[in-house]
Length: 93
Image (cartoon, rainbow, N blue to C red; front, side, top):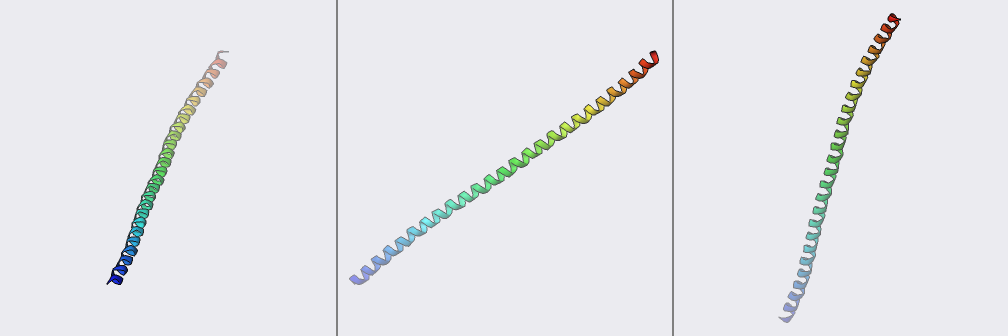
């Protein structure tokens, strides 16, 4: 009977050891899953930020191109006015 009790104590210690190891593995897995989720979220945030910044830069480039086109049109008008004034000057001389 004492041998059985001793054997059960050994089995109990063995099972407790496995139980604690299982708990440690479960906590480790939970921590790894949490870190992986945070890393994925960070990567998504980085990608979103980069895409948003590129979109803003593209919009700014479009606005700058429109301003350049407007300035070129204005310069063309001024050149035409200058030509007309030059022709009138020549006629008046």
